[in-house]
Length: 116
Image 1 (cartoon, rainbow, N blue to C red):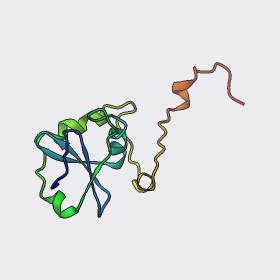
Image 2 (cartoon, one colour):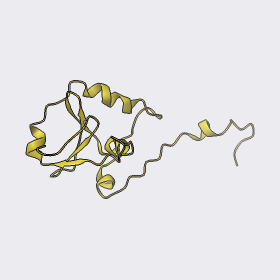
Image 3 (cartoon, helix red, strand yellow):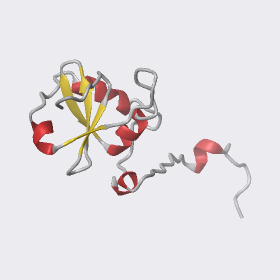
C-alpha cells in the first residue's frame, strides 16, 4: 500500500472484489463482510475505522498472518455460537441487519395448560 499509512487493526478492502483483509502485526488475514462491519464500529487511533482501498495485485503481495486464526476465533465466541452465514450482497449495498433468534421455549416459561 504505497504512500498509505496503515495500522494494526486497520481494514483493507480489495477494490475489484470488495473483500476485506485485517492488518495484524505479522501480516493480514481475510475477514467476512459481517466481521468487517463489526470491526468498523470500533475506533482506531481515536477515529472511525474506514477501510483502505487497495488493488488486488497489491493485496496479493501482502504477507499472510500466522496469528490470524487466533484473532478470527474471537468472532466464534459471540453470543449464539458465533456469527451465522450472512450473504455479503446487503453489506456491499450499504447495510446489514442480522437478527439472532431463540426458540420460544427459551423466552417463555413452560405453560401448564395447553395452547389453544
